[in-house]
Length: 140
Image 1 (cartoon, rainbow, N blue to C red):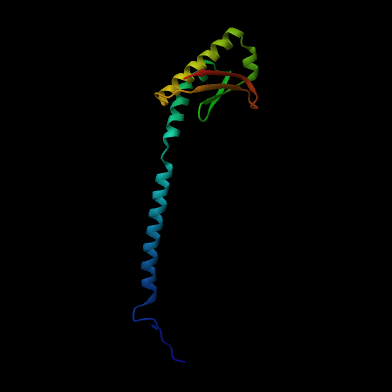
Image 2: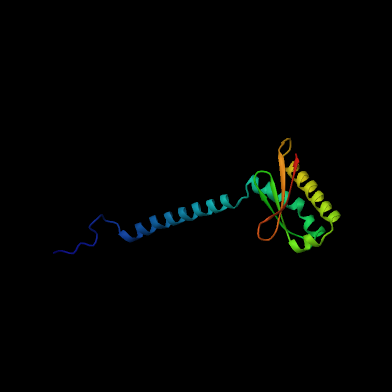
C-alpha cells in the first residue's frame, strides 16, 4: 500500500484545525464572559430589597443585643430576628417602642421603594429557631 500524507487535499491538516479551534475557543470565552457580566448585575428587585434592608439596619444598632438581623419575604413582609432572652429582659414600654420604631421604619422603607403602591405590610418578630414572637401589620 502506498503512503499518501495529504490524502484529503493539498493543505496540511493540523494548522487548519488549529485555526478553527482557536476561533471556537475565543467565541466560547466571549459567550461565557458575556453571560457572567449579564448574570452579575443586580436585578431591580434585589436593589429595592437592599435599600429597604439598609433603611431598617439602624434598628440593629439602636437595639443591639436584641435585634440580630433582618430578612425580607416578598412581597410585603419584614422578618426581624431577635435574641429571645434579651427580648424578654426588656420592659414592656421598651418592647412597644422597639416594635413601633421597627414598624415605622419598615413602612417608610417600603413606601420609598414602591411609590404610589398600597398594600398591607407585615412585620414579624422571630427567635433564632424561627418561632413567631410577635406580628404587626400596617397599611402602606
